[in-house]
Length: 217
Ligand code: DC
Picture 1: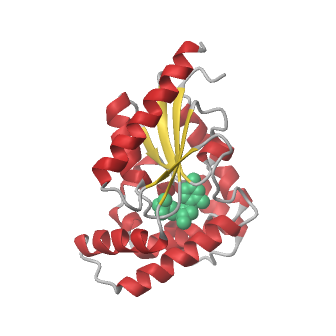
Picture 2: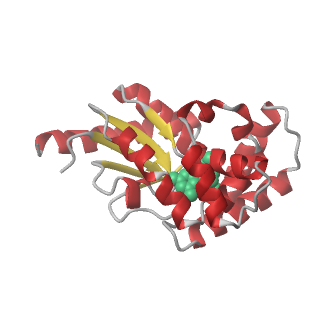
């Protein structure tokens, strides 16, 4: 059994998992790691170094130079960075190079919230609380399109929807730690929910998991 109360939040792009993870961090007073930023940073660093994203050794070398302060770079939040991230994330040796950072974060005193694609399946398989957050591709594309517009990145909705579908296929279809719900994850479909409703539903699921975890210690 884990000594730390770890909350694993997985799901596809723009499912609302980032906002939900932030809300859970506040509600349970735990630090939050958006693990997508790690892959975004590796993608951007590999690209900036002029290397081929399909070159596993080059992407791994970039992953090994990564430091926490690089995760603050606003360039990581762009649409292009999401695509670069999804491409380097297929490499098993890149994923392996990012393990220690994620494990150290997860094993903090008290616990932590991690959001990503493989937290409940690979990074923290013993997490006492696991959520898999989904929504239809159309709803997710609409959310991401609005978010990008808010950041000043004007792009057609159809292009965002195509990005989402391509990333779902790549993230879910790869051999190394593919995106999928852990067998013991609670599925939360946010398609018909406002973000407040989704955050509330997530908090209730985690409260129940926390009560079970406490009573079994
Ligand atoms: O959550 P995000 O959109 O920022 O993630 C960007 C990409 O990074 C995503 O398409 C796949 C990859 N990723 C991953 O493979 N494993 C994770 N735990 C988090 C992200």
